[in-house]
Length: 219
Image 1 (tube, rainbow, N blue to C red):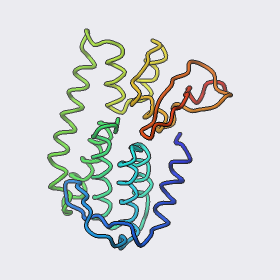
Image 2: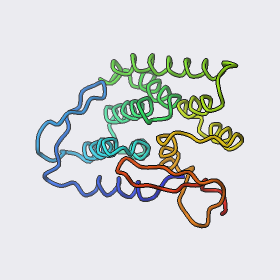
Image 3: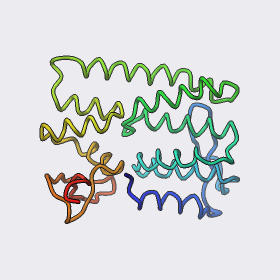
Image 4: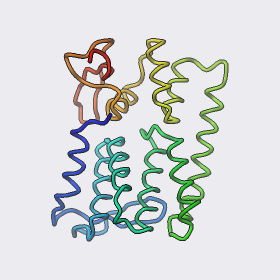
């Protein structure tokens, strides 16, 4: 369940390219640098610029959703598909991505199926790093001294969101603001007077304060 407003905003940005939008230069390894003041020269470039705008605005989950939508396009070339996979893996692996397992899957797909693209070389070390992160999180998760709050955080980082939420509800945990906003962006937490259960106050990157409850409570 994903907030419609974010997806609508992402789609609008993709479709409404303006001549003043800066073009981004691709570098295998996922680095996007401002190259000029000219508009992107393809729908793919515009879509990827939209992703970067979402990431810059702190809408990490919306950026992941936008790339996932883009990967369903039958018009992508092999290089474009590999690039989009790589960027999604980077975002999932990075701060606020909350899906280390998903990152491993993205980098694995590039290594296994797109070795003839320029993104293969960049994906190999990223795959090792993502696998290392998953192994570390799983090891910490299994330690007997790990607290329930720590387990929640590790499960969220791994991308095991439902397991994290089950633990959160069963133990009445209060996650960090960042985790609450991520749960809101993913679609687990919602705003609405009709919802019941415990409320969680969270503040978005732009300063917007939200009173959130689990989306399925009260419906």
